[in-house]
Amino acid sequence: MAGVKDLVTLPDVAMRIARMVNDPTASASDIGREIGRDAALTARLLRIANSPSFGQYGKIATVSRAITVLGVRQVRDLTVGLTAVRAFDGISNELVTMESFWRHSLLCAVAAAHIAAHRGAEPGESAFVAGLLHDIGQLVLFSRAQNEEREALLMSIDASDDLALYQCEQRVLGFDHAAVGWALARNWGLPPSLQACIGMHHEPDRAQAFQSEVATVHVANSIAVLAEIDSRDPLDAAPMAASALNICRLDAGNLTNLILQTRESAEELLPLLVAA
Image 1 (cartoon, helix red, strand yellow):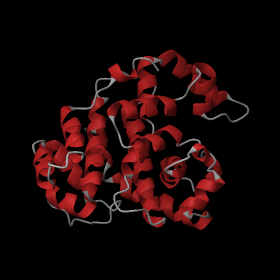
Image 2 (cartoon, helix red, strand yellow):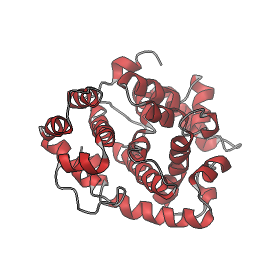
Image 3 (cartoon, one colour):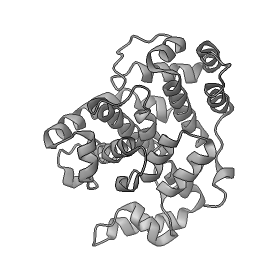
Image 4 (cartoon, one colour):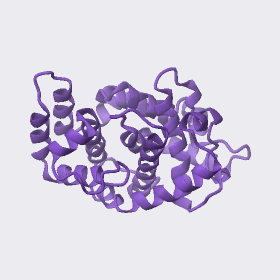
């Protein structure tokens, strides 16, 4: 994982806003003005803030209102998540299209937001952003270790013992995209809860802290796969840990509704990412 820090840096606006959120002298108005300097970012932020994933349905017209309703930290995390999409624009990738990558990521983000609401998450929890960024380590591997990642992908497709991609990466590389993503999230200075979700979304039982958040993204990842292929059968996606389903208060009936909600909510937001 050497070189992760040098590979991708967040745009300046995200770094400035992250610093401002942790600065007691910076007001919500100051943060709103900083975001407002980037018109494209502002438009994407408001579209997402008004989406069904956040339950506002058109009530948020300004960044300052988004901060009031969603909270400073959630707006900060959304800003970081959206600018992270831009950070990967220059990375060449021959293994999957960026549209398919961000489609899955967005579906996971939407599913995570719905799951968090279902289980009664604390205000300000950034489930959407955690879902959006859960696979960022894959983008690093697509760029820095294309041959090895291709080998792992083919192994996961051909594996007779149903090995998941992250398990094949561990065999080929000695680590997986979740570990790479975790390292990148630390280098970016993302909140510890987001770091944990990115690093342990495949193995939620490893989480010693932020267990609810990690469980949410773990389940959302499988829901995203089912939404992508329009399946209602959990066997068509990676197995969901029983402990995670229990934390998220989900059963078979909930899952079916969640898949439908995810597909419907994500469709209008996809252009915000693939055109970012």
